[in-house]
Length: 130
Image 1: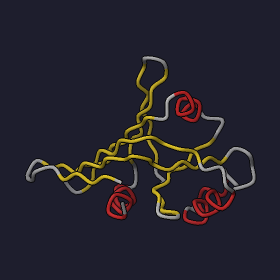
Image 2: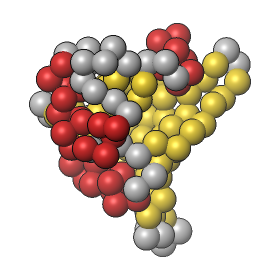
Image 3: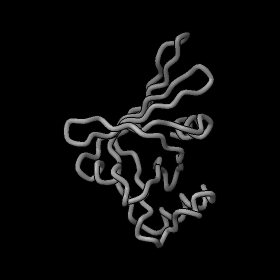
Image 4: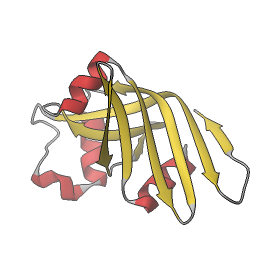
C-alpha cells in the first residue's frame, strides 16, 4: 500500500473513475494519504463524485509516471471521523483554503478490497492487494 501511495504522490495527478447510472465518469484527483493503515483520498460532499460513490462505491483510478502506470480498483468507504479528515488536510495544507475538517463538506474515503496493478511496456504487470 505504501508503494501505491508513493506512486500516486510522485505522479501528482491521477484519474478516478466512477459510474453515474450507466455512464462512466472520470476526473483528475491529487490526494493520496495513508492513515491508520488505510489508503485515503479526499473530495467534497457537494461534488457529483461523492453522490456517485454513495450510489456505487466501486471505483478505479489510473496514474502514469516515469513510463509506468498504476490501476487501482476497489471500493471507496467514507470515514466520517474528524481525525481522518484532519490527517488528510494536515498532509495537504494547500487544501485548507477550500476545506476544513469541521466544514461538513470535506469527505475522506479509503480503499477497501483494493487491487493495484503496476504496468509498463517493458515489464510484466505486478499486482498488489490490500
